[in-house]
Length: 452
Image 1 (cartoon, rainbow, N blue to C red):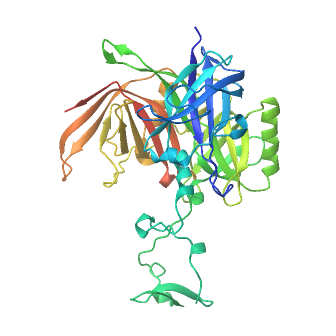
Image 2 (cartoon, helix red, strand yellow; image 1 turned 90 degrees about the horizontal axis):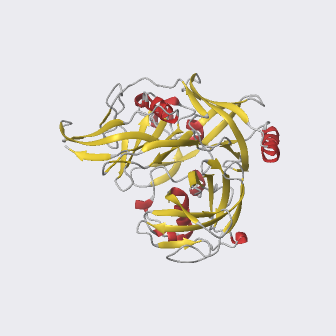
Image 3 (tube, rainbow, N blue to C red; image 1 turned 90 degrees about the vertical axis):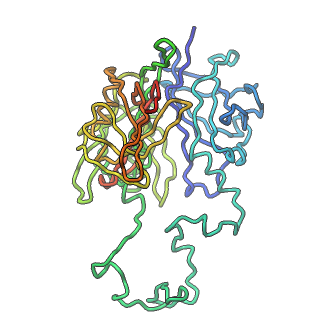
């Protein structure tokens, strides 16, 4: 009996700056194996978007409450495939923005090698921020109130200069905002007082990317290095006892504009025509520009070039080796110093076996899927990536993780224990240009949850 396994799938957003109106489509990329071997040539897929109660919100042919009748034929290369969900040229129905009025939605996929006998792939893939971008199209003009605006969200292009003359600034005169000349003594910060400024993500995430085929370039990382590990269901008696399976690296995406754009186009053409791949490194630096760590990528191919933001091109690199128990990405150093970083507004106190110190990550739990997701600053991530590396390499150690419940004074009053934890997803997602802002996110599978 053939077993179809969707090792990992990615819902990829479409750059808003490249396409002004939000298109009724979502780009989906996945990796499929058949009985442990990468799927090749052509396969047949059916797609549906469902809610948490299995109600159908959309399907590729408009069928509701059951498997779609018509399928979509897609080419597979080393198990990799991509599709624009809602693409009318493929015979698919458009995706209405109202689909994403539902808080939690998932993508369900069926697959067949011959277009006749279809098997549903599990688990359903959660759709997060990508799909909900469609809702922006449906916001009526002049309907956004002040309460809906984030701090610092009004840009200069939205401020009218009417009534202003050269050399004036918009200032508060005690009653209202007015245009007037500015005296240096009026500016906080220039004279050693409190001063703050919001910088674009390009500053936080501009990394030095060392490609073997061209000199090092400065690129803005938009999708950082990461890996997903298959969770193989199991039981110990009547209790869940899952174990890690094969792993697959996430695509790595950066934006770049410069003199080596033509060289990158050549690298893309070589991958598409002959499957040529590269090894490269992404260097993470501190505020002083010193190298603190580097990510090394092995056998990645430049699969796509698209329009990015601020006049840059977006470059998507994908792993080319089949799902396995070997890391195609590695970080040097593997571990970071173990220090405490606790934001009382967002963080929770946790203890994990074999961690050198208590950690304070941002915490999210999904009891239905038996997972917890932790977001950590680099100063407290310590041996987290090493745990991921060991799990991928086939020497996993299932650990006990505990969420510490405290009172208003910080004293422990209880704990939630998660037994049999191991990582199933890991990613560094920001801070490539400033290690001080580096954050990584890990999702842990657990077997049993108990409250003390």
